Image (cartoon, rainbow, N blue to C red):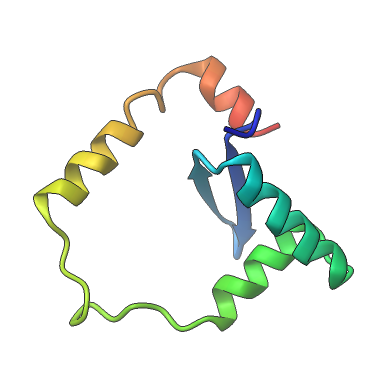
Length: 87
């Protein structure tokens, strides 16, 4: 995992934390951003804003989805984890 294990997007005052990205994923994102002369943040913001999203009718949330979300959020109240995520 990447040492920061998180990428933070800022758009319209909202922050989105993406946890657990691999070193390879971070490297691809950074390379794509650099090739376009963009920061990682701006590159990801643009990608999310311009790509179509999966509609609610084509994706159903399952109990397993909720379990994965709960497992991913277990350390959100840990100050050390949150401090590292914002670096």
